[in-house]
Image (cartoon, rainbow over all chains, first blue to last red):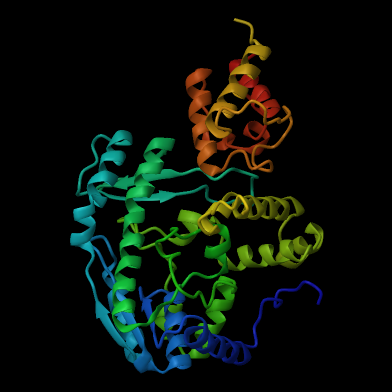
Length: 324
Length: 87
């Protein structure tokens, strides 16, 4: 089919049926489990995954777990409860603040931030951002740290490698503790843990290895983000979840996924990516998306570089086989 | 002081070999090889490389200069440092 603006439109009813059939088969035949545990954040991906699981397995075989911590948005819990009520599965809350504090998550992160901003203290909010528009320049990914005191002006600096690595390593404790919590509840019931990452997150490495990347099955890891939205519409997901701007829910200043990681709105990201994967010439993609050829080439290069650079995140632990 | 291209090349190559190739000098890469395409450096590596340039060559790398054309090969790095050093 010729590349066009509707090329990623799904037959949502057919795809939903296929996904539900596959989830049933994977849970029963491959994983030998009898239900699914899903971490629910009130975001679009975990919403679609939990709705699919409820439809595939029956809502009584699905448990949604909200796992807020002291820096989470309160909105997440409200939306997660709304979701559970709509699709009829049980939802529980596990506050992970105490666990994170015990692991030194906040302390270790703040220690790194103070290397860049000595004035930083607990009253500040912070977030990590990347270059704003990946299409205008063929730029490398690098990271800024923004801090802001309540009522104050934001301050931003490019992160040094040591600061970046420590802030990310400390913040990743959040996703890893959430994974541990999900497995506690799954093992207690002999159920499986559902992964909620979409194709954008999975292939471009926007997940924490053994954190939100740690799961038994990943039912939407092959779907572009804009296709996840189409399924959400079909499944009848509440409008305030669909219209919510995707966030990381990791940094206290409220970082959107676009500013933290993708650097581009999802429609253009996914269309560019699909065009690149199917070898559509840059000129043809540019004409369909209303971009210049150079912008498309920058987009192709950026996506390809990200997939390549994040390959180790998707690897299974490497084993050594020296033969008999 | 005149920019010493050969000295810069050796320092850059030593940094790359020590930091990303476990010090193994038998792994060959040319001055024009892309670090990213060869899988030598990832995005974290670019941050480390930038910090190295700033320290070793006493230059400041602006955000707008974080480009493959400046940073993604030994050749590009030498050209970039030269232009920053005013030689």
